[in-house]
Length: 510
Image 1: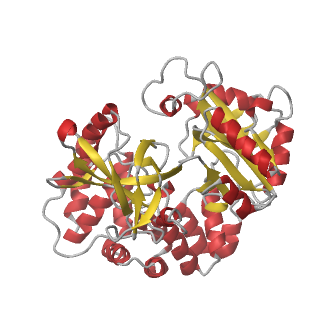
Image 2 (image 1 turned 180 degrees about the horizontal axis):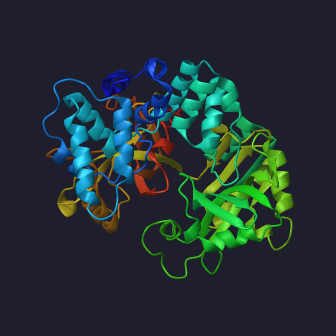
Image 3 (image 1 turned 135 degrees about the horizontal axis):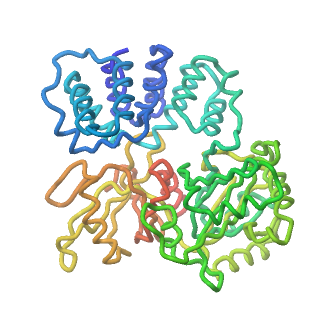
């Protein structure tokens, strides 16, 4: 298969907003691919490369572009082999060798292929919502149930390998994928709930109501004395959080997979600033004395028994048993199971009084839907908040002259396209944040204009708002009301941002 075939399919996918049409195009390409081509083709159409981060910047790609080839000749296999060589080239003189490799690859590409490769390698093709479309396409191409594809992907975390397994081995190969202790599972996500009463009315009496902490999501795996910790984006942070490792290593079990949150607390047991917690997961040194406390709310595996498909009440029973000892009881997320309306309201009040965000209401009969944001878990906060993608920024004026200030906000497109703009805001920005935006955003620019920058959809920001209103100004037909910045969310990817349906759900009467 030629790279040109992949480029043509990618162009067709971008040209339509129909999720069905996107999936049909991708499925056709996957059917035509040879077995060894399925993994790279799948990765590229999802905006990724199989080799992971290649350390190639946009400026380097632009400099090496050069004159394009007149005819398409690059094959998928040749490009994938070149990217592997690029990823494994290191040591003395590696910069020059990498430049030669990359220059040769781009020189052999046509103009359309060059544009595709530059966007792919610089991250501009990375549209998290497109991942779901590719999963639908894999199911169609292999003629297997979509649920089998999604489950195998969520358990393995590897979309290209999932596609290869589906096309080579069908449903049997997908169903053979199991939870592995030591291999992270994509976390189940909570949908925004409009209010506590609405969430209880939606899910019924058989629920648990738990604190929603202002912390960082963690997934912890234990196998004997080995303990490993991942963030919500499945980035391993084990070496940076020894206090979490020690707490889990002390539990009375041999193997376990725990889901929860962690945050830094002050001497009074109240949460420290979110930035203090996140500093423990960054590249810079954390503030001295910042220790993380874990709070677990789910158990996916215990001593050889997978609990992923069990209803939540079974998983909670197992978690309660694991943390029954007084020495471990504090590791349990505070909450009440099957509460009355008054008891649920009391949980919310205690959470807010303690300095936390709110509560999560969870259906007790729901299995663990790895990687999904369904209605079985609903987060309730006293104000509406959304995680949106920053897709542009305007130069400020007045006191903010010379600063990149007013950000453009995009909701994830359920159809798998680019984020859909739903509003702008400059409210809630500190001087420190303005300085950070001004120094950081130019490096993410996909287009410069007199008014500001259009940005690659890579950054997620948490926005507080009073609701939404219908609007003809934005393509999604909806606009945010009184949006203000709460904070950046470096722990979240654009694939985890709230989608357009979540914004529309905030319409009055919607």
